Image 1 (cartoon, one colour):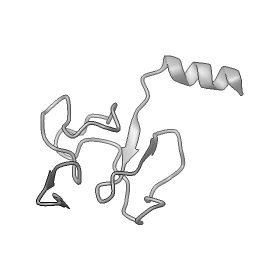
Image 2 (cartoon, one colour):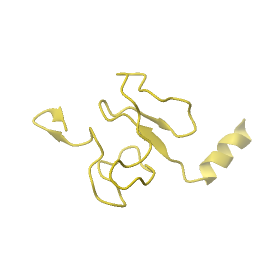
Image 3 (cartoon, helix red, strand yellow):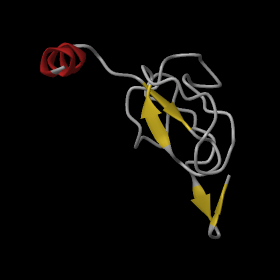
Image 4 (cartoon, one colour):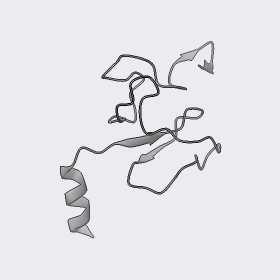
Length: 78
């Protein structure tokens, strides 16, 4: 198992994000829906379709567009 984690660390990990509550998990996990709020997870930018490489990013590093649910205004997610 330790070898498996070392191999994953060598790869560029990508993530699935919840567009409603900001939950995230690794792309290798079987989750399709958010276990916190039930929304369908996204695994790529909705604008340019590039994979999500930073689960804490608010914007796509390839096209600059905001990820759904990542920008907060007036205490609400967009």
